[in-house]
Length: 332
Ligand SMILES: *[C@@H]1O[C@H](CO)[C@@H](O)[C@H](O)[C@H]1NC(C)=O
Ligand SMILES: *[C@@H]1O[C@H](CO)[C@@H](O)[C@H](O)[C@H]1NC(C)=O
Ligand SMILES: *[C@@H]1O[C@H](CO)[C@@H](O)[C@H](O)[C@H]1NC(C)=O
Ligand SMILES: *[C@@H]1O[C@H](CO)[C@@H](O)[C@H](O)[C@H]1NC(C)=O
Ligand SMILES: *[C@@H]1O[C@H](CO)[C@@H](O)[C@H](O)[C@H]1NC(C)=O
Image 1: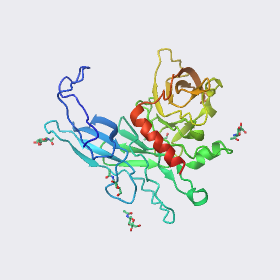
Image 2 (image 1 turned 30 degrees about the vertical axis):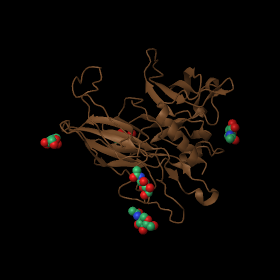
Image 3 (image 1 turned 60 degrees about the vertical axis):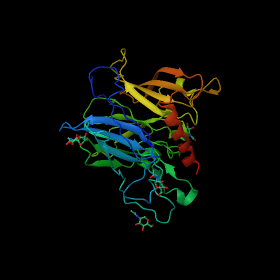
Image 4 (image 1 turned 90 degrees about the vertical axis):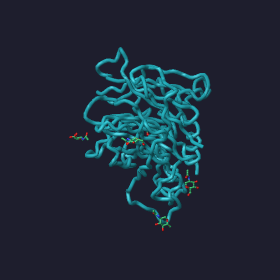
């Protein structure tokens, strides 16, 4: 009946053993992939919340959109056996409608494919949010992806369009940012500790699914609220070897500090690349980069190669299902 059981410690909050007896179940609507992503936090009034992504749910306020996914907020009350969850209906609200085109930008957008919380903001993304305009000329939609900053008080949220012009200006001869699928993964830590959000967001669709990522400041007052990184930002050729169209770099990603981190390289960036090649076979891999602040280039620190596909996926079962979805949409 229900897709996800969310386990939580009731006793022994400070120890590392997981208490599998005292659990709270948070149940979502059937068939929605409820629990695909989740964050838990306590608000100022000591109220505990779990915010949960369900990538195949519908919006409750607009049945015209085909299974966009939805975000649920669940107020925890440990004295109750079932927890109350409410759909948040996180929308783009651009008021851009294309009545002469079939479908909507939010159709099948995989809202809630990834989610992380940083200070006062929850970030979640819809990696298959689409630019519909190209459909007029070439029968394709462009799943650029879209991310949302949800206020920790769960009362408001903002979202900005990843401006296509930003991509186009950078590499005038390439149209390879059109299928970016931004937001299939989000780092769980800030990349730099400053006043901006400064997190990393995976974009496995950059350069014909070769992949890449964004450094996302999420600053609502700045026009340039993100920077893109692909193999064009690699400092040397070493890592390009295993990368080709379809490698999906950025399918999973993380960041952190290594003990030997130098001043010029405050944190490392770890990128899962489940379809990279080695010795002419698709084996998947993981790249560890340092992003130098001085020239904004990526220096390869380490590269791990898998033995069989799909090394570099974060959660093989769930992620693989959405991987198929990605291709379905891209080739429509
Ligand atoms: C979402 O809406 C569609 C179309 O109305 C329906 O077919 C589908 O069953 C709904 N999905 C869920 C999980 O409610
Ligand atoms: C859904 O589509 C119908 C028919 O096009 C339209 O009349 C209605 O206003 C739409 N609903 C919403 C919430 O946009
Ligand atoms: C938690 O649930 C119990 C039992 O239904 C209820 O009495 C109590 O008021 C709830 N607590 C909060 C903070 O909502
Ligand atoms: C785009 O231009 C750059 C530099 O002029 C060149 O190296 C690259 O191969 C070109 N890419 C394509 C897809 O034509
Ligand atoms: C956005 O950037 C401006 C200028 O750098 C800065 O003053 C402001 O505090 C930033 N806002 C947030 C929310 O970080």
